[in-house]
Length: 189
Image (cartoon, rainbow, N blue to C red; front, side, top):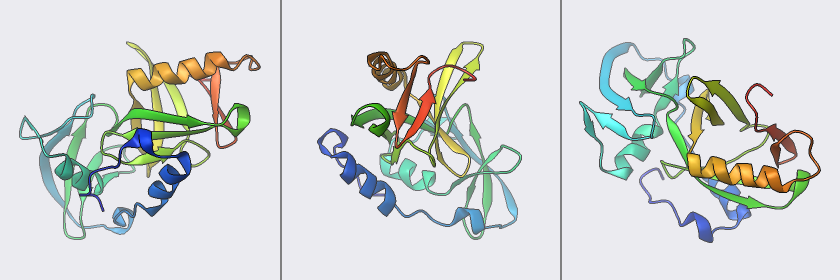
């Protein structure tokens, strides 16, 4: 349920995290096509804070609820969508932030799970790739979450990924493995 507080990430095994991720059922926003109704007067800041009419939304349960009806449109814009209305929402960078990392295994058998600022958990792999984009202010790491929605990997989590990459002395390209997929930690690699 989106309103249930997330469990303590550090105490979960990766198998439990994967099970939680699979059990998390989301509304079928991709199949809802109501008429556009206007602007939600909401914004998601680069740091993952959600705002309504300029004020931060202080209730995590509300943010989790809104995050379940967030959709990226084909033109790259973001909307909050229900079966009866569609409202624009401004997103400064990515709609989610990966705030915690849990790694199990080594080499190509490594599995990396991320907890997002909304409490969702995502295991990096073929369906949820990691990528690095070069921006004017430096590299920005992203994790694909769902339906064109990404999570910006928080700085502390990115440093953890870099440490894992540096610990792998067998790779010529700095990067990390998760679920059998190698993700380079260089922009455009």
